[in-house]
Length: 158
Image (tube, rainbow, N blue to C red; front, top):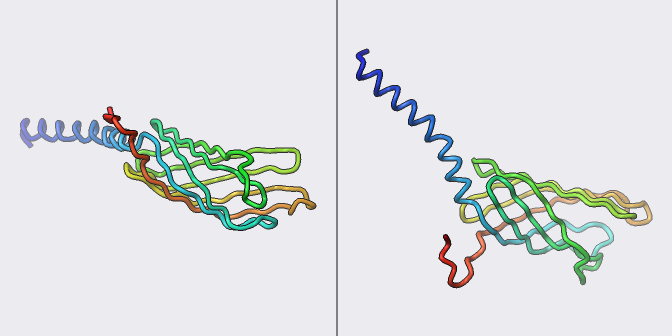
């Protein structure tokens, strides 16, 4: 192998090394910003029906924050918010968790999904631990979908 061939191979290898991390950074920048969608979870015992609610997600770098309303048992009033936090990997996989406790119950949410520049999906579960007189321990699967939130009028996107 002559010196010119060795130089070309070394240059190609160097370009691959600097291009691979750059691709992850480009994916990360492409997914930053707000997303809006909805989440659907199976019915919990003692509640009026399945959960259908709005889902808001914000991505900043590799950090992801998601929020959805928590409703009372008959679904007629918002009584709080579930705030899930987590990360998104350069390949677009995201992981979120949430938890809270009160005097009568504790809650843990765990969600995984995919995120792209235009939106994504999540699946996961919610575990509820309540006193036996308050429906006991239960869990339910959840599914969500979201799209990039529209830019406000007059926003240049820069």
